[in-house]
Length: 254
Ligand SMILES: Nc1ncnc2c1ncn2[C@@H]1O[C@H](COP(=O)(O)OP(=O)(O)OP(=O)(O)O)[C@@H](O)[C@H]1O
Ligand SMILES: [Mg+2]
Image 1 (tube, rainbow, N blue to C red):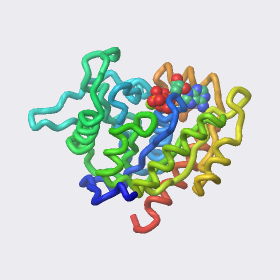
Image 2: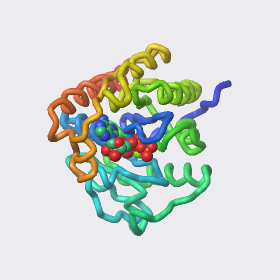
Image 3: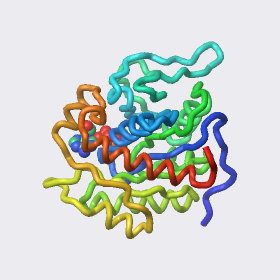
Image 4: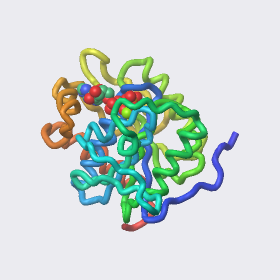
């Protein structure tokens, strides 16, 4: 069954990558944030859309408290930090604790509004941090917007890898190119190897593996990007950034 149809491009944005997972809490937002920083370090013009409307977390990860209500033309001004332009529902809700409960069709409209009515300027790449799983809103966005590649995140244990395969199948069904799998939280607790096995099963690239580190939790909680302070992350995210950018820009010269 072909679920894809004509997809919309966003003016000014050269490429869009989605970060997805089958299971919650596997590190999508952490990976989106640090990958964006690695791309910015390479000289790319990068933006992030926090498409997790119900539980936005990108502003917290970047320690942003600014509010970004739409201006008189109904447009949203992204907040720029460390060279990355960020738009999140967190900039539009009154407090961090405000519960945002909307149904799928409304959620996908809000995500599209944040995407299309933000003043991104010229971007080489926009990363979209999607909500967990194969929800209505994610499906609708992938169906309607030209997303040039999907990065799938999983922890190494088998339960998570089953879920990420489901997300992978959704991505394929919607004709979104799969850029590869990132394994996160490798180590004693969740084991290792599930990411590369999943990549083989999905016939896609294994982009890299990030260890579970107490330091990462602490940096995230403090709103300090771990990328700037941990050499091993600089290395891993640099590699993931290169591989994914090469894939999405493979067919054009920039
Ligand atoms: N490699 C890691 N080592 C230690 N802690 C990590 C690692 N990756 C992520 N975390 C921590 O795990 C928690 C969940 O990460 P994150 O919020 O990025 O996951 P998520 O997939 O976006 O979750 P959600 O499904 O809620 O959107 C955060 O507190 C984060 O700091
Ligand atoms: Mg998240």
